[in-house]
Image 1: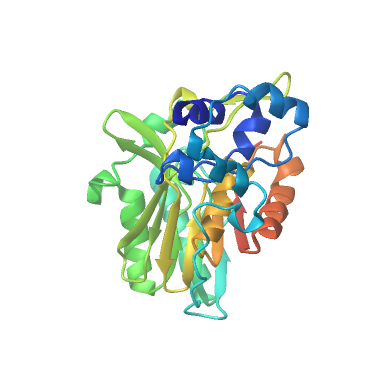
Image 2: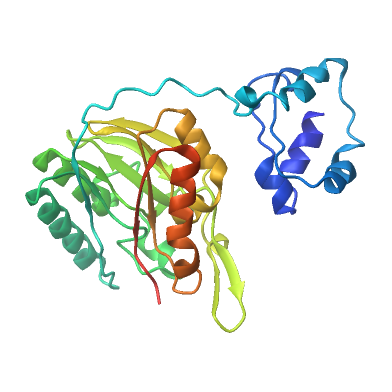
Length: 297
């Protein structure tokens, strides 16, 4: 049964893959999953041959219990440490000069802090041109730090000096023989509090308009990221992660006060989806959203 559910999650049919939520910390007979908005004929085609164990009646019974539709259950929402604070969103113009990009980002963060921002956010891939050719060249070893990662070293220093929280957009990260699109969160003490690797890579091919395959060079992350900061509990996603509502649902269930998605949207799908996706995720989960795009022509 477990393998059958896993295969359905990986199905190319987006309706199936986006509406079947499965939590593997319990035996399948104890783990309710949620099937919503699946047409009856499609349900019959896909699920009528599944063999349920004798204890699987608890699964089917859970489908009618709305309070069990989310698994694991929502955690009590923690009280935010601040009820009011300023957020600085830094829009950056990226150049082929990495050192210049870092200096530009430092200046933007400092200006935001001078205007009272206690949380400062950068866009996606702010230290490098957004291309598969550039990612390997500009990638940094975040775990090594120091000279091996001048971009995050700057973020750490500025966060500590200005006593602010920084959601550092994202940069190409090198870890062993793999590259990731990674967002680092730094606390007011300058320490790295969280690292989120983009989970959903953006592969697109619209003839005559745009073709880009992140998966040619980047590896997808595997772990949702929720971090407690001096301004509250924050969930982190990167750009295309926002199109998958399950991630935002996890963050809301984990008590996030705010969800941040640094992005570098193109001008083909961006104007169609950017604002709509923000509003949908915020409304569905009743949580504040901050998105800060770097629009690409």
